[in-house]
Image (cartoon, rainbow, N blue to C red; front, side):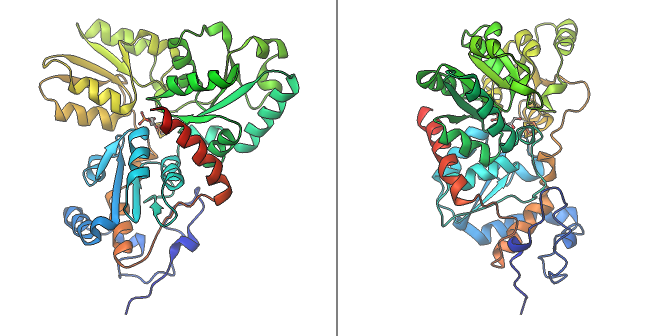
Amino acid sequence: MKTLVDITKTAPPSDQPATIRVPEIEKGVGCDFDSYLLVPDNTLDDRIAAAKSRLGKNVVILGHHYQRDEVVKFADFRGDSLKLSQQAAATDAKYIVFCGVHFMAESADILSRPSQVTILPDLNAGCSMADMADIGQVETCWEELESVGGLKVIPVTYMNSTAAIKGFTGERGGAVCTSSNAAAVIRFAFEHGERVLFLPDEHLGRNTAFRMGIPLEQMVVWDPFRELGGNSPEQLRNAKMILWKGYCSVHQRFLPEHVDRVRREIPGVKVIVHPECRFEVVQKADSIGSTEQIAKIIRAAEPGSKWVVGTEIHLVNRLSKELPDRTVQSLDPNVCVCTTMFRISPQHLLWTLDNLCEGRVVNQIAVDEKTKQWARVALERMLSLV
Ligand code: 13P
Ligand code: SF4
């Protein structure tokens, strides 16, 4: 008889490897993650497929476009943050295994029913951008904005933020957005207020607002480490967009010089970038889109066309392999990888599924009820707009 240990009770804090806190799990029975590091690579696929089929309709695997091939091939649904959140809200499966990063799994938990369980196969799969806005800093920012008086600010938070910030946003009349619907959500915010506090990605906020016709002079950056975010009350009164000083360390790597170089070197090239890229890069690109939109545009393009893509390398390589009749390559000459997305390995996926087969839930993501209530409001506002 195998020992059943619910390791959700002993889940490690997110800054520690998920392997550290599970020594009490009986070795060799398929529940200690360390033993999964010894599973021969050539047996992983068969074992994942077998565990998945044993779980049947009880499990749904969601995979973000940045996941590695060895993992995403097992996803029942793959997509961008918006598509995956819609799937999470629609699925009847008891277990939602989210192959993505922490904020995505939190959103799935918020949108799912109480009887459903959301799992992140490696708790260390975070997001450096989401970490750039802490709820305490955001609350201080709000108080300081209120102290200026009469600003009528509506918060909009990018999906890439913690559940606490989504809850904060929902409670103050705002909504979540993703990279594919930011304009619609900002429009909604302006129907209810005069200014938008855009969290936590300054680039997505600036790129979207500029394309909506808001001039750069009406945008300010809020630096959480400075009083009034580094602005004068006058600057805040003149601003339509207050952009939190946060960014994605992966997309920040792309530079306008990269665009100039590929235009010189590849005649007829089309440059397509994610809106998390810097404003100067987006200005030089031919198109802009979420991961799902990038895939859609390149799939619909003419055979023989040449594409240079400013986003994470796994999606770029996958499109290149899938579409051999056109050229698809990265805008970054060096490999541009999201290392936290990469943490979800086939071993983690198998470990998660094997445990479920044994009746154990590991690495559950459970947002507390109070936060959930307002975060759901913010997410549902977004979903009602798209
Ligand atoms: P998408 O919504 O475009 O998938 O973006 C999520 C993300 O984290 C991009 O870095
Ligand atoms: Fe976060 Fe950037 Fe990775 Fe997306 S690519 S999950 S924004 S760190």
